[in-house]
Image (cartoon, rainbow, N blue to C red):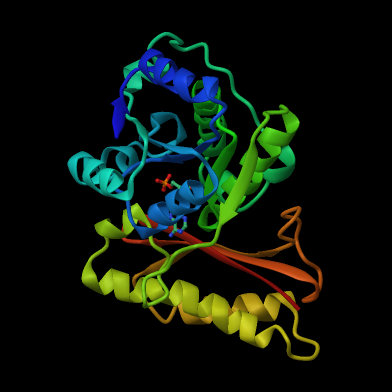
Length: 283
Ligand code: AMP
């Protein structure tokens, strides 16, 4: 596996593949890799000639400096896993490499229609930071296909719209959430949970599945489904609810009735670790 820490080195290396018209799949990550990330990479490997992975913990997308400082890192382990997986190129830049030349004059882009609810109001500046770094990475790598996890569903819709709005010649593929046997969605942040907290964190998925199970009942309402979820989550005294939302998965608008396509999305705090998860289904 080639490892590049500079944009120049990465671009030079990619030239040889582009000259041969080879297709490039790209998986951006923040490292501390797990099965969820590997699944995206496997998808990319299946459908592209080469796969590029980036590891960059983007300071711009952290609204909470403590969360940024405590973000888990495992550079050596990640490189070993990526090598075993047969990834062609790893882009591993420093913050200086990415933001050094820009200073304070940063472009800020928003997609207001998709940034009204869910994580946007709880994490001010987060998606602006995501849009900024993803645009830069797309510019560096110029991939044919990019792979994003549906665990971060709002992020997936925002990047899809970014590609559409700015006409990036890129296809985006959303990959389903990989879970522990317990149902807990895999996340790098899970490593910061205590054993007791990880046990209670499984209530997030269980509560959404319970709401799904009840969604077929006659005359069931959105507030009732939210109550079902809330009750299950609050059976743990360690869980603090950030939001429970039931929305249209295409537009992120509120659902009036329990019918058609449904997105249930939850954010909770366990201690100072914030976890998100969602499911989508049709009634
Ligand atoms: P992160 O390193 O958390 O920024 O995630 C990098 C990519 O992996 C994003 O597209 C995430 O949505 C995706 N991802 C993270 N966790 C999972 C998971 N459990 N299942 C599927 N994709 C995931």
